Length: 174
Image 1 (cartoon, one colour):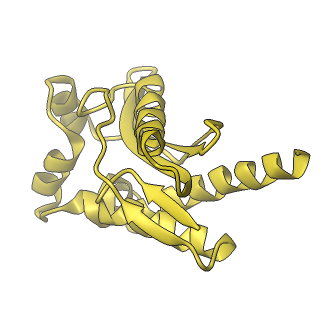
Image 2: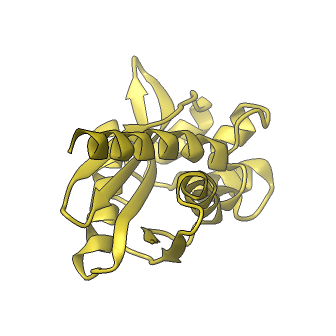
């Protein structure tokens, strides 16, 4: 069984492999860099969700051997004047079925939100804010602002559980 992952991001890859391996212990994983076809920094739930779907769909275009492709996308959204992290995942099957799920979010400090509104991306902002390189591959902003209680991989693991749960459930109906 082959599962495609639409990124080389370590946190996202770890989440997909950790959860999918529970249900599909013999799975072979293949990472492919595919564009989200949305902004580099998605600024709404809708745009973030669409980025995840776009990644997953592109994975399956030329693949005849993969059972499904996974697209994961991080973004931000504003609610009542407060900017929050948002995250989405999509699972697309060989037949073209699309399953989506969303994950946890936490508010961002105003100084980070201001930079995002000005056009910057969250990953590089967080590298400077945390004085670390490649934070998007490790704990992510959610890890920083949750004091390490939830890291980026764990957040995407939750989304993966929801995606695979929907996929398994849909197969029971057939």
